[in-house]
Amino acid sequence: MSELSLGNGASLVYSLPEIVLGSAVVGLFLIDLVVARKELLGEIAFVMMAAVMFCTALVAWPEGRALFNRSMVVDGFALYFKLLLSLAAVGTIWMSLGSREVRTANQGEYYALLLASTLGMFFMASATNLLMAYLSLEFVSLTSYVLSGYTRHSRRAGEAALKYLIYGGVASGTMIYGMSWIYGLTGSLDFQEISTALAQQTSDPLPLFVALVLVTAGLGYKIAAFPFHMWAPDVYQGAPIPVTAFLAVGSKAAGFALLIRFFYTGVAHATGLGGWAYSGGVDWAELVTVLCILTMTFGNLAALNQQANVKRLLAYSSIAHAGYTLMGFVVLTDEGLRAMLFYLTIYYLMNLGAFVVVMVVSNSTGREDLDGYRGLAWRGGALPAVAMAIFMFSLTGLPPLAGFVGKFYLFAAVVQQKLYFLALAGIANSVVSLFYYAKVVRTMFLDQPVGGEGVVTVDAWNGALLGLLTVATVLLGVAWGPLFDLADRSTHFFLG
Image (cartoon, rainbow, N blue to C red; front, top):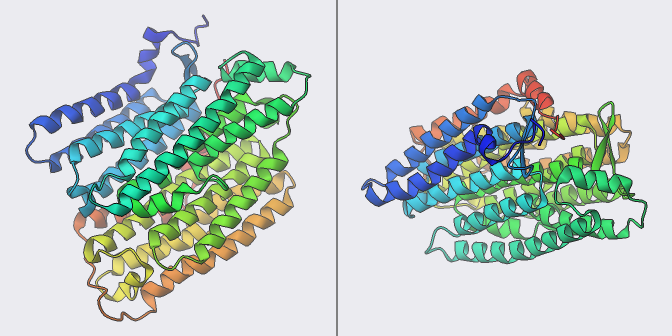
């Protein structure tokens, strides 16, 4: 065994974040049995996730190691996503501590499931084996089903969880069937060995094409890409708001982590000078381009018609942003990969911030519909109204906000490969998105309340989170260099 490919015992040294996170899950279940003040469980979970982030940073950016007999890997790419996923969990716990929906739930189980889902996402970011990839994705899905329906007496939450379960089961079965084809074609579960076997194949590429379509369906479901998005609007609307935010930023990031690693290291090979080429005679550029354009176009057009529920509007917006992120995947270059990593972090800030505003309004008024935002800026909600305006314009991609910088690098990667049509499609969709994002801003600042909307108050806890995300969104629009450098350092996969 290579010194960079470790067995089970030696792998534990590089698995400190997962060990701490797994211990935290078990610890929360046990502490729940003896603690009378259940509010403490959220604070304990928050501290534990901060410890996980510290352990992840402690591992640093090593040369790379294959862990547990090549079922997982620790490299810069995995560590970047683990930090991002840790931030998603920290933000969700922070939101949960200030959420009225979560206070009425069984908090011990809730926070334990939230950390367990994060643990599964860590495994998704590190998986280099088809079996590990499937098991980790299923682990995340099962915990997500429970979390989405956690408000037990809500019929809407129960409906969301059931739909999520049904769609997820179909997507999971489709994906594992495609994985079985890949195993049959290559005789291996290891991504690197699959890539090597495909590069040597000269047979008909049709079976590989069918297999990859099936796998793409499963991974596309996780990132809510068209046409595998059907679950997202209902689940986002029905789930508790912190869970919706977690699915929008954490689950989506984990899905992209697995999608990128599988296609870059399992179905493609490096060609030098930052370029990659698909193996096995299947050229995915055209198909992924169509998938990308359809995803962003459908998401934006569907969001235009959303009047009733802001969470549902943000669900369709999330679908559109999956399409934007896929632009970096289409080009199959290091520049596109770097742009995806950078944009997913920017998306985390502005999308989580938007859901915090939704939660603040819901806490005060019990409303999630757009009419409930009428005159928000003049009903005691000046801070959330200003913050929401910043997040909406950043999601659109207007300068000088972070969303503009993120989209700029995505478009630049596409233009560099002379895919001008794709770049124009992305720009046109950004223009379309301005209509429904600006509609939210107009409602908050220009529409007059008609009575019954209620006064909005922001407590210090939620206000601090909102202020932090707002400042970060603005600051990264003018000083994005350190984050971009970090993303650049994380584009290298360990292939040993």
